[in-house]
Amino acid sequence: MAGPLQGVKVIEMVGIGPCPFAAMMLADMGADVIRIDRKSAPGEENPYPTLGTKYDVMARGRRTLALDLKQAAGREALLQMAERADVLLEGYRPGVMERLGLGPDILQARNPNIVMGRVTGWGQDGPLAYAAGHDINYVALSGMLHAMGRKDGPPAPPLNLVGDFGGGGMLLAFGVLCAVLEARQSGKGQVVDAAMTDGAALLGAMMYGLRAHGMWGDRRETNMLDGGAPFYDTYACLDGKFVAVGAIEPQFYARLLELAGADDPDFRKQWRQDRWPELKGKFAALFATRTRDAWCRLLEGSDACFAPVLDMAEAPRHPHNAARATFVEVEGVTQPAPAPRFSRTPAAVPAAVVPAGEGAAILADWGLERAAIEALREGQVI
Image (cartoon, rainbow, N blue to C red; front, side, top):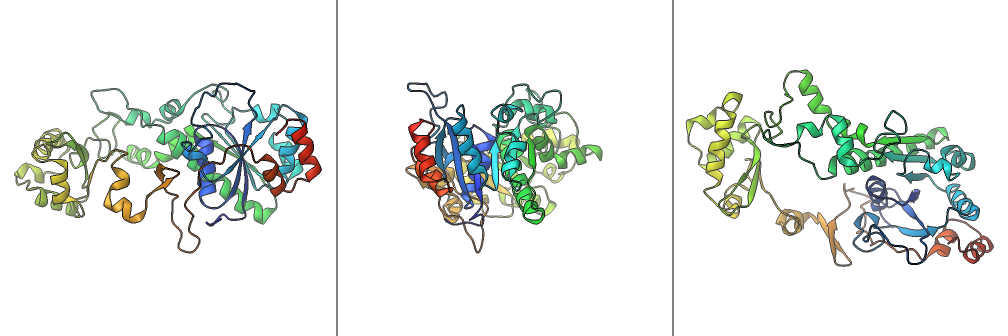
């Protein structure tokens, strides 16, 4: 094991989206994370075919225990594991863990130090708490989805990066580590309520500040960072590929104009918002004169704030990403490497998910007695 979280023990209730992403982040940093999977009936169809395979990238770096929580013995085994855990992560709708007899009161009665990290879309309370939803719904309610997309089209779904992963999984990982640090001082755990709507709103903190100051409008593609500014957008090249420019500061904008050969005096009117549509047209015509590779040779590595728009096949091969090992290959699957980086306790290259089947070994590692483990096996609880 390697990484700054060595010695931290985490139980992850299997799920999709933000909870496994948070668990992946903790496992990447060296935490001992055990994924609790449900014990499927023979022949039961898996609606998520990548789960438990090497393509389930967010399951990397941890072992999986298939446990029948419908049986009292299964719930008791989980509670015995919780006695030794620092964190339990779950991403079910509010009340599911309580109905299983595994709510925070029960967990903390067995382990007063345990931190229960709960991630949902709407939060543990509020009028929408029990409603179904997905990333796009939570981002919509935060006000951030309305700000994304072109002015002549509908709001554009930002993949599920803003709700599931940024506003959900990362917020959950941050929250539980805050609570673990506090528990080591107070001796008391607590519940972390990570709602994706809250997290998506938090990611928009700067935009809300700019709007209050009169520097951000509600119409899409009219603001500095939403594609409204000619110096902060993507442009098509001669070969149909795209480049991204982000030359906000005057000195960087001047360098972009210099290197690109943009000698039209109109380009100098950087902050004339009434001229932005016209300037975008001029930039579009300029970038259409060369291929993406030609623009890279001219601008990449300069202070023009430039980058090619790479697809997911190209990104791992880019010289900068290759030099920093931003991507790694695990069992033939190319995937992002653990981040951030640490000078003294670096993370190791993660291992692929270990499929369920090591239940006895996991329970033994977590302190359960051999006789109890054999009883669980005989009762088909594991």
